[in-house]
Amino acid sequence: MKTLVKNIKSLLQVETTPRLKVCGSDMAQLPHIDNAFMIIENDTIAAFGPMSELAEQTFDAEIDASGRMVLPSFCDSHTHLVYAGSREIEYIDKIRGLSYDDIAKRGGGILNSAKRVQEASEQQLYDDAMARLEQIIRYGTGAVEIKSGYGMTPEAELKMLRVIRRLKENSPLTIKSTLLGAHGIPMEYRGCQEKFVDLVIERMIPQAADEGLADYIDVFCDAGFFSVEDTERMLEAGARYGMRPKIHANEMACSGGIQCAVKYNALSCDHLEYTGEEEIQCLLNSETMPTVLPGAAFFLNMQHAPVRRMMEAGLPVAMASDYNPGSSPSGNMQLILSFACVNYRMLPEEAINATTINSGYAMGVSDKLGSIAVGKRANFYITTPIPTYEYLPYAYGENKVARTFLNGKVV
Ligand code: NIG
Ligand code: FE
Image (cartoon, rainbow, N blue to C red):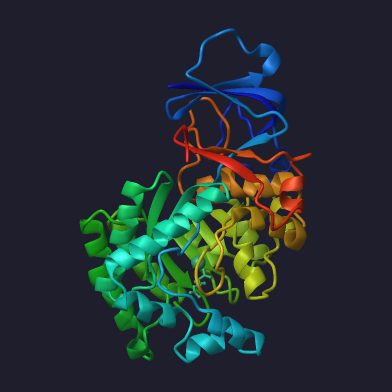
């Protein structure tokens, strides 16, 4: 099957020499071709260029994209989108003045979702998550990382990971799975948290590895949750089974999480509201992608990670949705673009790099996704008619994605 997309007003994020990530001042560059064509062969990008260079040939299908732009699909490298029920009542508690921490301490928050996941059937979790995947596809996402973490018992964590495996098998999205055994501390382990860490190490990690259920391992390494010492024990156990870390760090405090991520060669460390010069210097000598979650910072009304300073220092920055029922009940990556520009003062070019190639790196797929390059997988979208690419973050709240292609096929 050979498909031509022609008369593209602007083909964005094109690469002739593909990179795995984009760092520092390079993030302000967004290579593009105006009045372009792109050829798809089966599930792969086979060629692209200006319309004036399109050679005479036959196609099985032709799409006219006049007035519309084409972008590589978003890579959403951090979500918790397998969950049961919603938490809008806690959202009201927060409006009335309770903090995330207050809610967690009284057994709400993550523990509230854990109870519901424990009670839910695997089929129900699967159906609900599949509906969420269909929704994020319509907003332009082409790859997504999904974490466990609302199980909190070996049985329920494994149930969540099996749901993710079924999603991988049945969704056209590229999906990576992460074992987040240490997301919160169950009530019965308060005061003897190291015993819960033992449970993660002795049961959850080996069982997940045994069934091949987890690509990565995550820990909520932060003040009030898991210490650096707890985290190191779990990451070492994960490493014995070949699970590379992607950890939650520095959302609540300068807790040493970033240094811990770098020490264990994490693929990413995520949240980063509390990031100082020491953390930035540490990340500079690493292969760990600093990942910011603007939806959670917005929804919890938190201080913002120092993204501009990070880029000035030469770091790459990725952004993801954190789609989850507690701190970011949306997986709409177009909104993340708008938050990036307004709340972090990123340029549209920087925001697009953060949500495509760099977030692709943060989930280990940027060799295949995250840009328009020959040989990469044909996951892209055609926009509605828009005047400029800057319009994408500007017109927040409007769906600018008209047609999505995943693996070369319309979905
Ligand atoms: O990434 N920060 C930790 N975990 C999630 C929140 C999960 C929840 O509140 O349910 C996050 O924001
Ligand atoms: Fe998260």
